[in-house]
Length: 188
Image (cartoon, rainbow, N blue to C red; front, side):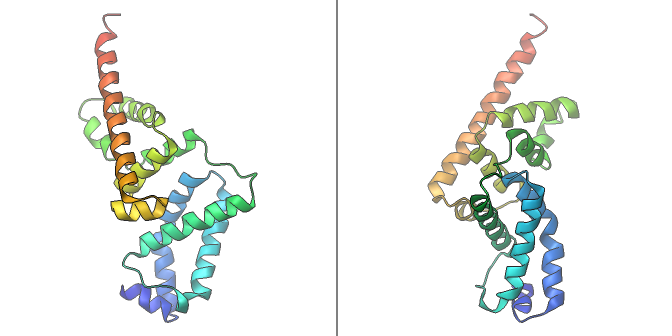
């Protein structure tokens, strides 16, 4: 990638452009890992400082976004291990961050009002494990490939496929169950 190569050669404008292109997504992703805003900001600052200082020794990449996400995740996890008082983000906060651009939301809007649809989606996502929520966000919100997700989550490809399949199956069954309950409510 030309921008990455230019940055590696010491071009400050390329570095600033990379920062500006990805900072919002990195912040958003950081909130999926932890609710500690200061830890996220410090980790991002550390990441970009590390990138600049070690730019000449960094490996080539086909996807700057993937490289940054993986690096940020590793840095946050490392910082959380150094500071065990920082807890993993609570389920409620994870849900608020994942819901943003979730593709299912668009399909459900045809059948329900926006508020009811978001509530149902939240309830469905609450039923998923943290790992399932993470794989859904990587796949459908950030459009990462299964191979990239496997690398980010430090899992093998088949485990990612299984997690994704189980998450989608659970959401599907949740929505079917919720649909039946909604149909029966007037009777009850």
